[in-house]
Amino acid sequence: MGHSGKRVSGPTVGRLSLYRRLLNVLRDEGVSHVFSRQLAAMAGRTAAQVRRDLMVVGYSGSPGRGYDVARLLASLREFLDTPGGQNVALVGVGNLGKALLSYFAGRRPNLRIVAAFDIDPGKANRVINGCRCYSSQRLAEMLAAKGIRVAIIAVPAAAAQDIADRLTACGVRGILNFAPVRLRVPPGVHVEDLDMIVSLEKAAYFARQGGPRTGEAADA
Ligand code: NAD
Image (cartoon, rainbow, N blue to C red; front, side, top):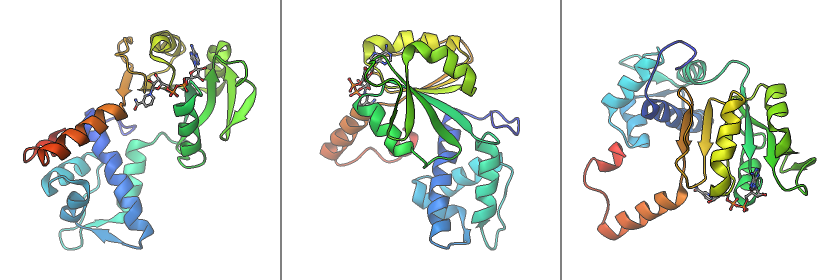
């Protein structure tokens, strides 16, 4: 649910986030207006889908000039973002966790990884790739102190469910899970699984087949 109060589906939120990324690129290139068909071509969607999605955020362009890029970005920000930003925790500061920290550092002012946790005492009480790392024993204390409701899991598969249980018990309501396990979470908690190996295998499969059937890429 955006803070405007409208409930929208996960795929719609994903597409809105993608449109925002594309619009940021256009803005940086000095483009002031864009038509739905242009945004659709960039996003690999249809113009009708783009228009339907953007109606959700409450901003419609003008038929003659298209969408005002700056105003549309402001509407997307209002719809997608929490005012003042949201603090995020990372659990598991290994190869993947460190890469995530360096990627996110200073890049997403609205979604800040403000605390990282690891079971390895050698990583606790250090700043790693711009983020303070704590012993995972301090999870509950630090989540409460920093008002964290979103977390990333980058621990080995065997530890992931226990971490998810502890996170949700502390009030986390959104999890980005990189561990290759299906997490069980209480109702009201959203889990987003991300698996680069599945995506790479898909890319390799379709490279061999000469591409997906028409329309399939857009449905995935
Ligand atoms: P890694 O071994 O380099 O790092 C794991 C880290 O988690 C270590 O620092 C370890 O000390 C810590 N850890 C272990 N148990 C913990 C616990 N109970 N609490 C807190 N920290 C704990 O592994 P990696 O290569 O960074 O991979 C991490 C996870 O991400 C694995 O589950 C891996 O399968 C997965 N992964 C997923 C993708 C993807 O695309 N989904 C890609 C790479 C890795």
